[in-house]
Amino acid sequence: MNDDKRNDPWTQGDESSPSGGREPLPSSAETEPDREDAETLQARERLAQVEMLDRWVGGVLAEQRRSRRWKLFFRLVFVALILASLSAALYGAFFAGAMTDEPERPHLGVVELRGAIDAQSPASAERLIAGLNRAWESPGAEAVILHIDSPGGSPVQSQRVFDEIMRLRDQGDKPIIAVIEDVGASGAYYIAAAADEIVASPASLVGSIGVIFSGFGFEEAIDRLGVERRVYTAGEDKAFLDPFSEVAPDQRRFWQSVLDTTHQQFIDAVREGRGDRLAEDEELFSGLIWSGEQALSLGLIDGLDSIEGVARSRLGEVRLHDYTPGLDPFERLSRRFGRVAMEWLGVPKSGSPVRYQLR
Image 1: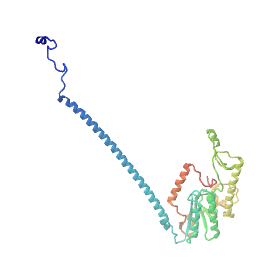
Image 2 (image 1 turned 120 degrees about the vertical axis):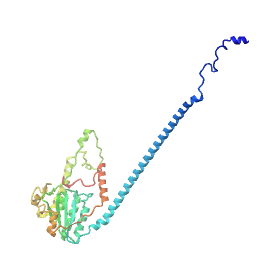
Image 3 (image 1 turned 30 degrees about the vertical axis):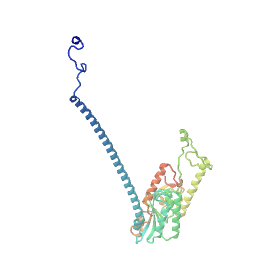
Image 4 (image 1 turned 90 degrees about the vertical axis):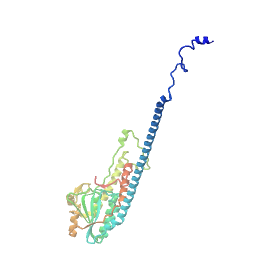
């Protein structure tokens, strides 16, 4: 048996390792650097995640801070607007009234008529009539000055002021003088005609005794665009002023009769106010506008002068006091925003389309 083992080729030769000739496994000292590299990589990944989370949290906090700042800003602006509105209202109610106390010395009471005459404008009949009555009732006002710089406007508003001036004029307590600055045309001249006297500068624009209505016709334009206009009315002629519909000849004649009637009312009022001072001229009521120098020769005005000249001629010096009612700043701002909003939305104005207005 022993000899067989010695001659056994499987047991002879060099000794081999138990692993059958494979390389020995690395020691624990040799695997330690790899383990450290893995841990370092994991630590770096965790650190990167923490930094990313930190940046995200910082961004969220910064956005919240910005949001709070804007909220605080808008709140401050809102509070400032409220305070400004209250201050303006208090100023108009108390201080403005105190500053407009009537002077003790004799003076001329001024009422300002500026801009287009309209129920929603500063040159409304309500405001002008209130100013005229304040100046008329003031014991220190030697005369009432209607200071005009306007192209005209609403026929109804003009008629209301005209009638009030004629009523005051019939009482005869003090003269009412219309002083025209740059423009006293159409509805503004309608009002001026009621005054006892009208003066203007040589280069002022005076007259334009006429009526105007203007618009556009788009019926052919929408036909070319292939747009169908749908209007539902009760009444055959209810939509005859619609710019997208054709105006029939009888409708045109009717609307012209409305303009002619309104024009005749204008002519009658000017004749009533001016009387025989008007020249006999066919073009006087044609809608033309003249310079102050031309208007004097036509009898549309009584003299060439300024508001300062009128004051000096009556008082020897310029002493004027404004009796025009003040405008509430908050109301004026709200009206302006309302008007702009109506224009943007295409909402039609409530006033008459017929105008005593220079165009």
